[in-house]
Length: 143
Image 1: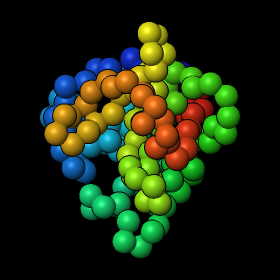
Image 2: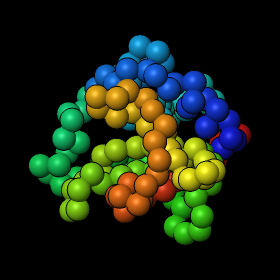
Image 3: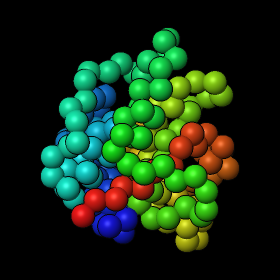
């Protein structure tokens, strides 16, 4: 199913960035991208997403996104990246994890698909600075 996740995510490339949205071609944020790919592959989302601010619970120090991902996906603790893994990032040391992407390949270099403020949905190199920010990796294991 991981190749399918990458294929679907690539159809979202070019979608403008829009906070809290999850509509292909119209607008989405990083969570909205993952939600949209999930809906296309599996149907209904596993839980409703409450409204959230851009700071993702940073003032309270709550790992809300990490907790939600852990409820619905399997944590990957080691090994090489595999296609379709959901990557969760800390944008700075000591901050809560609040950015998501989808590992999309390693040839000729590692890359991932994500929705990024000011850029929309793009496929970016998974460079060393991005890799250092990874807080957790997940796989989706559904029918």
